[in-house]
Image (cartoon, rainbow, N blue to C red; front, side, top):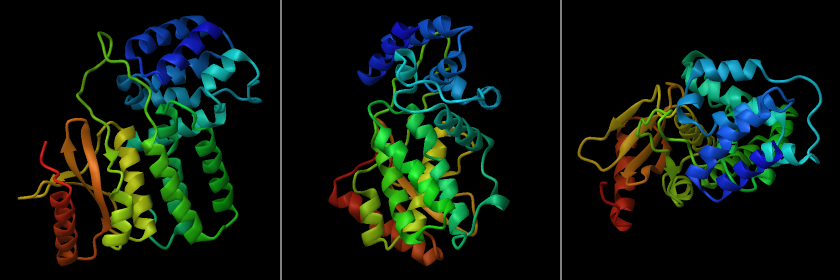
Amino acid sequence: MEAAAELLRVAEQLQKPREAKIARKRLLIAAKKTPHDWTARVRVAFGRPHEIANLDRVIELELEAPDGPEPDLRERAVLALLDGGSIAELVRALTAQREALEGPRVEQTPAPDDGVSAAYAQLRSVWPVFARATGDTTSLRRHALELQERIAAGGERDAIERELVELITAAHAAPEMPLDIGEDDTEDDFKRMTLAPWAVERSERQLGTPVWAIAKGLEVVSRYNASRGQRRDLKRLQGRRQYELRAHDSRNPVRVNYVLSTTGPVVVGIFAKQDEAHQNRMIDRIEGWLDDLHVGVS
Protein backbone atom coordinates (compact mmCIF):
# COMPACT_ATOMS: atom_id res chain seq x y z
CA MET A 1 0.00 0.00 0.00
CA GLU A 2 2.90 2.33 0.71
CA ALA A 3 3.98 2.17 -2.93
CA ALA A 4 0.47 2.92 -4.22
CA ALA A 5 0.02 5.87 -1.85
CA GLU A 6 3.42 7.30 -2.78
CA LEU A 7 2.70 6.82 -6.50
CA LEU A 8 -0.55 8.76 -6.15
CA ARG A 9 1.11 11.59 -4.23
CA VAL A 10 3.84 11.96 -6.86
CA ALA A 11 1.40 11.70 -9.79
CA GLU A 12 -0.79 14.42 -8.30
CA GLN A 13 2.12 16.74 -7.61
CA LEU A 14 3.45 16.28 -11.16
CA GLN A 15 -0.06 16.84 -12.59
CA LYS A 16 -0.18 13.47 -14.37
CA PRO A 17 -3.91 12.59 -14.77
CA ARG A 18 -3.44 9.14 -16.32
CA GLU A 19 -0.87 8.03 -13.73
CA ALA A 20 -3.00 9.48 -10.90
CA LYS A 21 -6.04 7.57 -12.09
CA ILE A 22 -4.12 4.28 -12.17
CA ALA A 23 -2.63 5.00 -8.74
CA ARG A 24 -6.09 5.64 -7.25
CA LYS A 25 -7.35 2.26 -8.44
CA ARG A 26 -4.26 0.50 -7.05
CA LEU A 27 -4.55 2.35 -3.76
CA LEU A 28 -8.16 1.30 -3.21
CA ILE A 29 -7.23 -2.34 -3.78
CA ALA A 30 -4.15 -2.17 -1.54
CA ALA A 31 -5.89 -0.33 1.31
CA LYS A 32 -8.96 -2.58 1.44
CA LYS A 33 -9.38 -4.26 4.85
CA THR A 34 -6.53 -2.22 6.34
CA PRO A 35 -6.72 0.57 8.97
CA HIS A 36 -6.15 3.06 6.14
CA ASP A 37 -9.15 2.01 4.01
CA TRP A 38 -11.28 5.07 4.87
CA THR A 39 -8.42 7.54 4.32
CA ALA A 40 -7.69 6.01 0.92
CA ARG A 41 -11.36 6.16 -0.12
CA VAL A 42 -11.60 9.84 0.83
CA ARG A 43 -8.39 10.74 -1.01
CA VAL A 44 -9.66 8.95 -4.11
CA ALA A 45 -13.12 10.54 -3.87
CA PHE A 46 -11.69 14.06 -4.02
CA GLY A 47 -10.02 13.11 -7.30
CA ARG A 48 -13.20 11.76 -8.89
CA PRO A 49 -15.66 14.51 -9.90
CA HIS A 50 -18.73 12.28 -10.12
CA GLU A 51 -18.03 10.80 -6.68
CA ILE A 52 -17.28 13.95 -4.69
CA ALA A 53 -20.30 15.70 -6.26
CA ASN A 54 -22.59 12.89 -5.05
CA LEU A 55 -24.24 14.04 -1.81
CA ASP A 56 -25.10 10.50 -0.65
CA ARG A 57 -21.52 9.38 -1.18
CA VAL A 58 -20.10 12.36 0.73
CA ILE A 59 -22.49 11.76 3.65
CA GLU A 60 -21.52 8.07 3.69
CA LEU A 61 -17.82 8.88 3.91
CA GLU A 62 -18.43 11.54 6.56
CA LEU A 63 -20.39 9.11 8.75
CA GLU A 64 -17.75 6.38 8.35
CA ALA A 65 -14.92 8.57 9.62
CA PRO A 66 -12.77 6.54 12.07
CA ASP A 67 -12.69 7.30 15.76
CA GLY A 68 -9.62 7.13 17.91
CA PRO A 69 -6.17 8.71 17.76
CA GLU A 70 -4.63 10.13 14.60
CA PRO A 71 -2.39 7.69 12.67
CA ASP A 72 1.38 7.95 13.02
CA LEU A 73 2.73 10.32 10.35
CA ARG A 74 6.08 8.55 10.61
CA GLU A 75 4.56 5.64 8.68
CA ARG A 76 5.35 6.02 5.01
CA ALA A 77 1.84 5.09 3.85
CA VAL A 78 0.21 7.50 6.29
CA LEU A 79 2.52 10.34 5.27
CA ALA A 80 1.73 9.80 1.59
CA LEU A 81 -2.02 9.40 2.17
CA LEU A 82 -2.46 12.46 4.36
CA ASP A 83 0.26 14.56 2.70
CA GLY A 84 1.06 16.31 5.96
CA GLY A 85 -2.59 16.64 7.00
CA SER A 86 -4.77 14.65 9.40
CA ILE A 87 -7.96 12.60 9.63
CA ALA A 88 -9.65 15.55 11.32
CA GLU A 89 -8.86 17.77 8.34
CA LEU A 90 -10.35 15.24 5.92
CA VAL A 91 -13.51 15.18 8.04
CA ARG A 92 -13.66 18.99 7.88
CA ALA A 93 -13.30 18.82 4.11
CA LEU A 94 -16.13 16.28 3.83
CA THR A 95 -18.39 18.35 6.09
CA ALA A 96 -17.80 21.50 4.04
CA GLN A 97 -18.31 19.51 0.82
CA ARG A 98 -21.64 18.21 2.13
CA GLU A 99 -22.76 21.73 3.06
CA ALA A 100 -21.87 22.95 -0.44
CA LEU A 101 -23.83 20.12 -2.08
CA GLU A 102 -26.84 20.60 0.20
CA GLY A 103 -27.14 24.11 -1.16
CA PRO A 104 -27.65 27.49 0.48
CA ARG A 105 -29.77 27.82 3.59
CA VAL A 106 -30.80 31.43 3.55
CA GLU A 107 -32.46 31.35 6.93
CA GLN A 108 -29.18 30.19 8.50
CA THR A 109 -26.89 32.59 6.68
CA PRO A 110 -25.35 35.06 9.15
CA ALA A 111 -25.90 38.78 8.91
CA PRO A 112 -22.86 41.06 8.47
CA ASP A 113 -22.75 41.89 12.18
CA ASP A 114 -22.67 38.21 13.17
CA GLY A 115 -18.91 38.07 12.81
CA VAL A 116 -18.31 34.74 14.56
CA SER A 117 -20.85 32.74 12.51
CA ALA A 118 -19.74 34.37 9.27
CA ALA A 119 -16.08 33.68 10.00
CA TYR A 120 -16.78 30.01 10.78
CA ALA A 121 -18.75 29.61 7.52
CA GLN A 122 -15.98 31.20 5.49
CA LEU A 123 -13.29 29.13 7.17
CA ARG A 124 -15.21 25.88 6.65
CA SER A 125 -15.49 26.56 2.92
CA VAL A 126 -11.72 26.34 2.46
CA TRP A 127 -11.25 22.71 3.54
CA PRO A 128 -12.44 21.10 0.26
CA VAL A 129 -10.00 23.43 -1.52
CA PHE A 130 -7.17 22.04 0.61
CA ALA A 131 -8.36 18.48 -0.03
CA ARG A 132 -8.08 19.00 -3.80
CA ALA A 133 -4.75 20.84 -3.67
CA THR A 134 -1.36 19.41 -4.53
CA GLY A 135 2.00 20.51 -3.22
CA ASP A 136 2.73 21.62 0.32
CA THR A 137 -0.30 23.31 1.90
CA THR A 138 0.80 22.48 5.44
CA SER A 139 1.34 26.11 6.45
CA LEU A 140 -2.05 27.11 5.04
CA ARG A 141 -3.83 24.33 6.92
CA ARG A 142 -2.05 25.25 10.14
CA HIS A 143 -3.06 28.87 9.64
CA ALA A 144 -6.68 27.75 9.17
CA LEU A 145 -6.60 25.82 12.46
CA GLU A 146 -5.01 28.79 14.20
CA LEU A 147 -7.74 31.08 12.87
CA GLN A 148 -10.38 28.63 14.10
CA GLU A 149 -8.95 28.88 17.62
CA ARG A 150 -8.82 32.67 17.45
CA ILE A 151 -12.43 32.86 16.22
CA ALA A 152 -13.54 30.61 19.10
CA ALA A 153 -11.61 32.77 21.57
CA GLY A 154 -13.26 35.95 20.30
CA GLY A 155 -10.18 37.34 18.60
CA GLU A 156 -10.01 40.79 17.02
CA ARG A 157 -12.56 40.72 14.19
CA ASP A 158 -10.93 42.99 11.61
CA ALA A 159 -7.61 41.13 11.80
CA ILE A 160 -9.34 37.75 11.49
CA GLU A 161 -11.36 38.90 8.45
CA ARG A 162 -8.21 40.18 6.76
CA GLU A 163 -6.38 36.91 7.39
CA LEU A 164 -9.38 34.90 6.19
CA VAL A 165 -9.28 36.74 2.86
CA GLU A 166 -5.54 36.11 2.51
CA LEU A 167 -5.95 32.43 3.47
CA ILE A 168 -8.81 31.71 1.05
CA THR A 169 -7.08 33.61 -1.77
CA ALA A 170 -3.88 31.60 -1.23
CA ALA A 171 -5.86 28.33 -1.14
CA HIS A 172 -7.51 29.12 -4.47
CA ALA A 173 -4.10 29.86 -5.97
CA ALA A 174 -2.76 26.37 -5.11
CA PRO A 175 -2.69 23.89 -8.03
CA GLU A 176 -5.37 21.19 -7.90
CA MET A 177 -4.84 17.45 -8.16
CA PRO A 178 -5.49 16.00 -11.64
CA LEU A 179 -9.02 14.58 -11.78
CA ASP A 180 -10.22 11.23 -13.09
CA ILE A 181 -12.16 11.68 -16.31
CA GLY A 182 -12.69 8.53 -18.33
CA GLU A 183 -14.82 5.51 -18.99
CA ASP A 184 -16.12 5.21 -15.42
CA ASP A 185 -16.56 8.93 -14.82
CA THR A 186 -19.17 11.44 -15.83
CA GLU A 187 -17.84 14.16 -18.12
CA ASP A 188 -19.86 17.26 -17.28
CA ASP A 189 -17.58 19.92 -18.78
CA PHE A 190 -17.32 21.63 -15.41
CA LYS A 191 -14.50 24.15 -15.18
CA ARG A 192 -13.34 25.43 -11.82
CA MET A 193 -13.86 29.10 -11.06
CA THR A 194 -10.56 30.87 -10.39
CA LEU A 195 -9.55 34.37 -9.30
CA ALA A 196 -7.86 36.98 -11.43
CA PRO A 197 -4.63 37.81 -9.56
CA TRP A 198 -5.73 41.44 -9.16
CA ALA A 199 -9.43 40.85 -8.39
CA VAL A 200 -9.31 40.97 -4.58
CA GLU A 201 -6.95 43.93 -4.34
CA ARG A 202 -8.87 46.02 -6.90
CA SER A 203 -12.23 45.14 -5.37
CA GLU A 204 -11.10 46.43 -2.00
CA ARG A 205 -9.18 49.47 -3.21
CA GLN A 206 -11.23 50.66 -6.21
CA LEU A 207 -14.72 49.33 -5.46
CA GLY A 208 -14.54 50.04 -1.73
CA THR A 209 -15.59 46.47 -0.90
CA PRO A 210 -15.34 45.79 2.86
CA VAL A 211 -13.25 42.83 3.94
CA TRP A 212 -16.27 40.87 5.23
CA ALA A 213 -17.87 41.08 1.76
CA ILE A 214 -14.69 39.91 0.03
CA ALA A 215 -14.48 36.97 2.45
CA LYS A 216 -18.15 36.16 1.77
CA GLY A 217 -17.56 36.35 -1.98
CA LEU A 218 -14.59 33.99 -1.75
CA GLU A 219 -16.70 31.61 0.33
CA VAL A 220 -19.32 31.61 -2.44
CA VAL A 221 -16.63 30.78 -5.02
CA SER A 222 -15.33 27.93 -2.84
CA ARG A 223 -18.80 26.46 -2.50
CA TYR A 224 -19.48 26.85 -6.23
CA ASN A 225 -16.35 24.82 -7.00
CA ALA A 226 -17.06 22.25 -4.28
CA SER A 227 -20.56 21.59 -5.66
CA ARG A 228 -19.25 21.64 -9.25
CA GLY A 229 -21.62 24.43 -10.16
CA GLN A 230 -24.72 22.81 -8.71
CA ARG A 231 -27.43 24.97 -7.11
CA ARG A 232 -25.75 28.05 -8.49
CA ASP A 233 -27.28 31.42 -9.13
CA LEU A 234 -25.66 32.68 -12.32
CA LYS A 235 -26.73 35.61 -14.45
CA ARG A 236 -25.32 37.09 -17.64
CA LEU A 237 -25.26 40.87 -17.34
CA GLN A 238 -27.04 42.24 -20.39
CA GLY A 239 -24.74 44.04 -22.79
CA ARG A 240 -21.68 43.26 -20.68
CA ARG A 241 -18.78 40.84 -20.73
CA GLN A 242 -19.48 39.98 -17.11
CA TYR A 243 -21.49 37.23 -15.49
CA GLU A 244 -22.71 37.26 -11.91
CA LEU A 245 -22.49 34.62 -9.18
CA ARG A 246 -24.76 35.81 -6.40
CA ALA A 247 -24.62 34.95 -2.71
CA HIS A 248 -27.91 33.43 -1.56
CA ASP A 249 -28.59 35.91 1.23
CA SER A 250 -30.80 38.98 0.88
CA ARG A 251 -29.16 40.53 3.96
CA ASN A 252 -25.66 40.19 2.49
CA PRO A 253 -26.16 40.98 -1.22
CA VAL A 254 -22.60 40.16 -2.20
CA ARG A 255 -21.95 40.04 -5.93
CA VAL A 256 -19.14 38.03 -7.46
CA ASN A 257 -18.59 39.08 -11.09
CA TYR A 258 -16.60 36.96 -13.49
CA VAL A 259 -15.77 36.56 -17.17
CA LEU A 260 -15.43 33.40 -19.24
CA SER A 261 -12.04 32.22 -20.44
CA THR A 262 -10.76 29.13 -22.20
CA THR A 263 -9.77 27.68 -18.82
CA GLY A 264 -13.10 28.45 -17.13
CA PRO A 265 -14.79 31.33 -15.28
CA VAL A 266 -12.42 33.93 -13.80
CA VAL A 267 -13.52 36.24 -10.98
CA VAL A 268 -12.79 39.89 -11.80
CA GLY A 269 -14.65 41.78 -9.07
CA ILE A 270 -16.44 41.39 -5.73
CA PHE A 271 -18.70 43.99 -4.13
CA ALA A 272 -21.63 44.36 -1.73
CA LYS A 273 -24.65 45.77 -3.53
CA GLN A 274 -26.21 48.80 -1.82
CA ASP A 275 -28.88 49.60 -4.41
CA GLU A 276 -29.40 49.34 -8.18
CA ALA A 277 -27.54 52.58 -8.91
CA HIS A 278 -24.56 51.47 -6.83
CA GLN A 279 -24.52 48.08 -8.51
CA ASN A 280 -24.51 49.66 -11.97
CA ARG A 281 -21.59 51.90 -10.99
CA MET A 282 -19.59 48.92 -9.76
CA ILE A 283 -20.30 46.97 -12.96
CA ASP A 284 -19.24 49.94 -15.09
CA ARG A 285 -16.04 50.26 -13.10
CA ILE A 286 -15.21 46.58 -13.58
CA GLU A 287 -15.93 46.94 -17.31
CA GLY A 288 -13.34 49.71 -17.33
CA TRP A 289 -10.79 47.34 -15.83
CA LEU A 290 -11.51 44.82 -18.56
CA ASP A 291 -10.95 47.52 -21.18
CA ASP A 292 -7.66 48.53 -19.58
CA LEU A 293 -6.50 44.91 -19.44
CA HIS A 294 -7.81 44.12 -22.94
CA VAL A 295 -10.02 41.31 -21.63
CA GLY A 296 -12.45 40.01 -24.23
CA VAL A 297 -15.25 37.47 -24.22
CA SER A 298 -14.22 33.84 -24.57
